Length: 286
Image 1 (cartoon, rainbow, N blue to C red):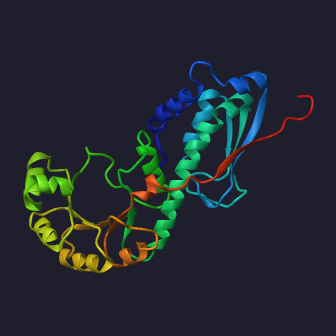
Image 2 (image 1 turned 135 degrees about the horizontal axis):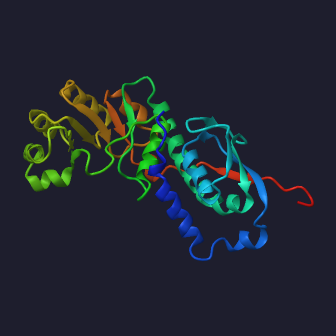
Image 3 (image 1 turned 180 degrees about the horizontal axis):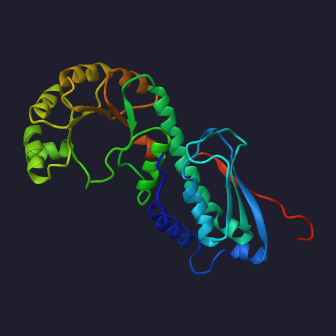
């Protein structure tokens, strides 16, 4: 698994810390904890799930204490149970307490996405369908959240409006039809850009195939409709099911034979995985 470059989360982490600290710093910790105090703490899972985003979480502590010492016990991609230790850290106590919430916000959020993705992938096991995310991500966190999907065993859809063409229903309506929309898109982008078009009916699907679309998004179709659509495509384009899908319907949709199942709720609705940072109590007299 390719890890995230720090370039993709350094700014996010620093902005989150600045949001918390503003101009006065950590009033509570600075008043209670001596500046010279050193301490240890452990990231501990409170629930079952899959870890993702540990490096970004640790970065929040390292920004505050560059000398932080870290022992990773269960890194990104590891499955954990309640009570499992994920990582142990040692450093300036003020830094551990001040960076705790920023670190946990990232770790819990990304681990929740990885866990939801893992469950969706398990529900489609044994079929050809791959589970993909969408652009329904938290503003500013897209690279991290899409990384968490990969950690969970899913794949990424386009990262933004800039890296692929996805012709949606409004584009079709404004262009005057599927065929016209595809022709305009193909004339307006380079030869390396793939073109996908959303279709609601088999008639629209036929038009997309006739124009040589690279992929077709089969929107809000039942498993039976998807099966007909996949047969109609006959391998001429990538098939993607999307719209109105729930954990309960994933298996039936996957068994219809589609290549991809895209799920917005992987990133916009996945519950955070409950993880805590438990600090060691200093010995008496320290």
